Length: 114
Image (cartoon, rainbow, N blue to C red; front, side, top):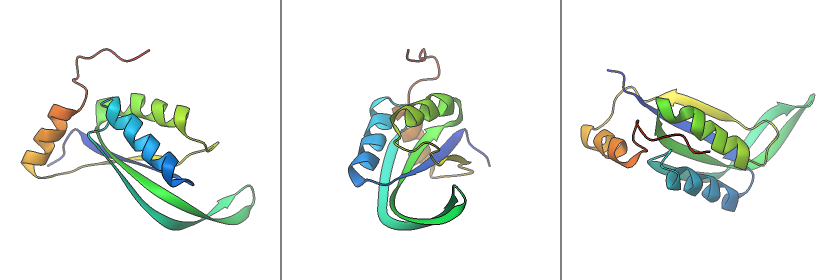
């Protein structure tokens, strides 16, 4: 059973920045909930070499139609040149939680912010 909901994730190298991203998304009603996990160690290729960094993971619960605005907010506020911003579908969930998300998120009829 697929839903219209998604979980968007990003990583950042500063705990305070991670909390700021989560709060900005929730305040804009583009995410019903933001969670910050970490610190964690990331290992990745960047500019031709393997890098290791301490990062915090930001998980945002949202809806598919809000993704473009949520991505724009994250890109605008994110300190990385090429941030990890991924959306994964929420296939199923507790009905009461999904209802709470729907009530918490920006209504579908709301105009997009300038």
